[in-house]
Image (cartoon, rainbow, N blue to C red):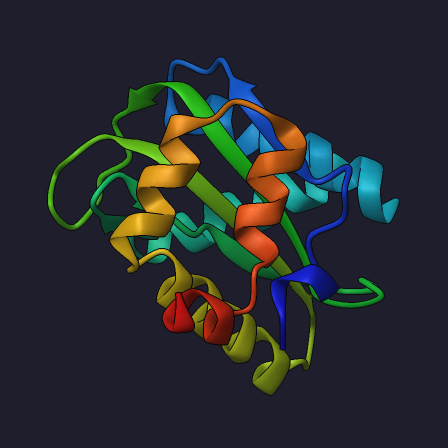
Length: 155
């Protein structure tokens, strides 16, 4: 699964201005709602419930909040580059400034896990993370995200 399949052109928030984890999750839920037509409250509650199980803050300023939504047509991602890092209860206790939210249909175990794995692998590449932090341009952010791993590794 490539991120180009799940990150639409409208799924990038290049300069998100939020002051808390809750505000961030609300912003992501609203953006996802616009993209998939599912009530933002349902998405918000799904993401909050998942965070209650354990933080999706991976460390190095990165978080991948995720959840499964009944009636969702397919795996969907929203990327946000935060204007200022926020506390996210990440595993390394560092604030978060790069966020990829993933939503998957209920019962989509393999696709959901593939998407999570793909995003996590991409965001472990220092050059990719540096490039994401260095731009606020929506199109450039998406281009960085959807570059196939093979092309990044070959560079």
